[in-house]
Length: 301
Image 1: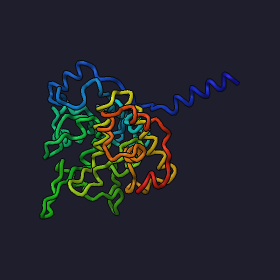
Image 2: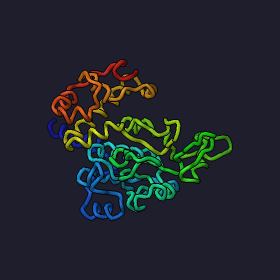
Image 3: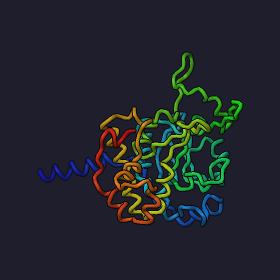
Image 4: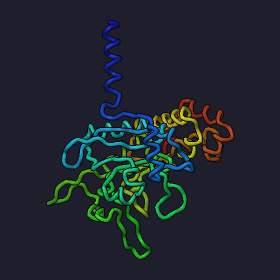
């Protein structure tokens, strides 16, 4: 019986772990290449020691298999690993995935190449504040099929990449036409249940169909934390999302209360968790480590 139990335990470990993806630290040569290409800087809020490579197998749009790589924050890396492992199992196609230094940090060139990417020390397009890509907590998938769309006040739309206008119709199945593949709409729930509940397709203008991220306060919080605390926080955050979805379904995500809001309620404060953690890290960690009480009113507005 003990032998059977051991075998079962090993089997459970094997089959519950990602099979086609893995997480590794950045090498010193990779970090230097990122610095040389302007993708990394000493001014970046996340340095190389807090970043991880997520390497994974994926299907291309012609049905072949390829290997991709994303660079993300250490705390979110295991969950990004699970996302891309499941995408491979689903047969979801990804054109290619190369770290942004292949394009010298140029987001336009990366989009033009239909490149799936994550970390990039850069500002938000057209603004001075940093993008969440600079924190390693944002992922862009299949930019051609999921373009970035800006609108002028008189209603003109601009697509990046330019050919993305061919995918302005977001229906996967259309009469007399081939089915579409690789649309972000197909994987919203997969990203959400792994902590990336914010999708650029929810925005009014610009609409960033390719973009998934955490919240900004969460990015600030995790980069203020050491790796251990950040990982504990994000694991509990993912558990919170999944518990809410399992108890009440995923169709109410438009009224979802973020885990950070739940923690603020528990701590009886309106102060951002990032500021609160800097002032009193023990109090924040105690709230995080306390078993979350899931209910309809706690999960949804």
